[in-house]
Length: 107
Length: 274
Image (cartoon, rainbow over all chains, first blue to last red; front, side, top):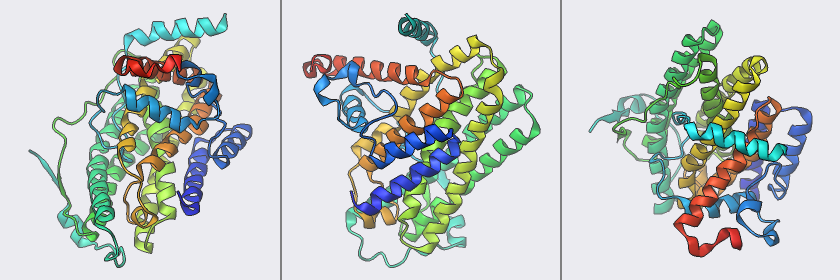
């Protein structure tokens, strides 16, 4: 990826951060993360659930790419374009699963 | 088969994409497919905002929100015409089959009217359109000509408005929600994140392209997927957390589900034991 492409990506992400109007501290964290090409993600990327401790420095996009590639049996059939897809339906099982997971964390 | 035919709209306003004789076959082909897919996607997305409009009416929301959702419907269709102009300028035909059937637009009847509005605000505004701002913003920086730059500028301005509509709804409505409803919305985030990952995962099957390819609209799959992940992890999820939703927990759950499916699909990889 060229410097031009990296800089363009950073500009796009800065615009998106501005739109989300996240607070100063969060915006600074996001900017720092983008500048470092998200080497240290601000959000859990699932590494502790799916991979060993020795790949802790792996890029979150790379990790998610690996997960997606081996897990999917088929896509939703849409091309990933700019137009928003129709929001998904809620699955009833998620309410209980989420409560259980949140309580596990709390305890 | 039903076709979306925007050839007349494209002919009425020719676009200057410069001399494209230097494009390789792969670059031109990727750009043509991308503009054609975008044309269809933008056209179909007007229904998504029609669905939001309906939910806003059901929730008794102020008319300023109705006006914004209605404008978004028109803007998505206008974007389809803009994509048709780019497609035509590159030598393509602005005619393509529409998906049949069109994706169902959920009414979220299992939720109360305000919760239903917020489900759409999260999926459409905080996720899809915020990612679109990052993607279009990056592509605009690399546009080959002033015409293409202006076209992307117009689309970007509208995407910013659509994303802001979602975030504004969250700002105005979430603070007054009960703890129970916030918890229900947080659980819904798991479905949204799984859907977002599935929607953007075709980027992984697309090859990278050259700067010249990007300058006329050819997609760089790996770069676009990274932009999607960066937007979700550094902007959308912190933004939702800041507004009182348990987005990190939901993201972890979405990834855990993906990890479980990965093990089922390819147990030999033994990701959990790696």
